[in-house]
Amino acid sequence: MAAYMLIMLVQDSKNVLWIYPIKIAIVAALLWIFHNRYEELKPSFSFLDIAVGLVAIAFWILLDPYYPQFKPDIFKPTGEHLFIAVRVTGAVLIVPLMEELFWRGFLIRWLVEEDFKKVPVGLYTLPSFAITVALFGMEHSQWLAGVVCGALYNWLYYRRKSLFACVIAHATSNAALAAWVLWRGDWKFW
Image (tube, rainbow, N blue to C red; front, side):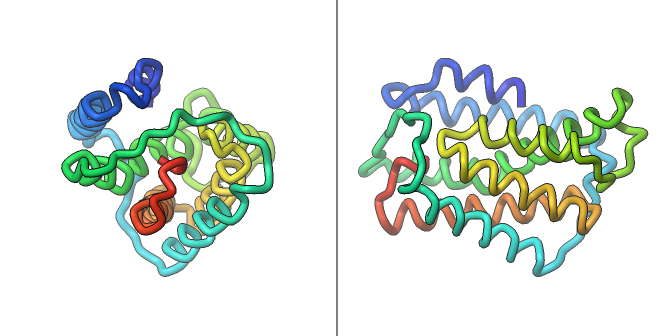
């Protein structure tokens, strides 16, 4: 997550064509290098994971016109098919894994106990819920939608006691949003 956020500091609409693929490659490499450390990432599946992901992205799209937002630097990759493929791949495979490992695998538990590995996956506390939801929202230019999605992903985390469920929900949301962006040309969501 730190590598992703650091690279975001230099990414803008003028350099995104080459910075975004580098950012995704670096994050993917780091995820692979440390993949043996993710003990809490146990594969599981429920249709609830997909339903939460679809509900989350429906809120993301439907809420968009109704609140002030951080102004995104909008990039329109017209005709950049390779970039779009990398963007979709990053959004669906890399970002959900990276963000869920950080938000719900680490931070939500670290806010309960500094030695976060001692905190069982899915343990609920109001402060850890509220802080991760607020920070998840602030990470996104569509901050209110980010808050709603963060709350839904947290709810799923507590309900299923599964970090993998959150990865599936987040990947579903990002895949649905990618489909929306490509279908409607609504690039502000990217």
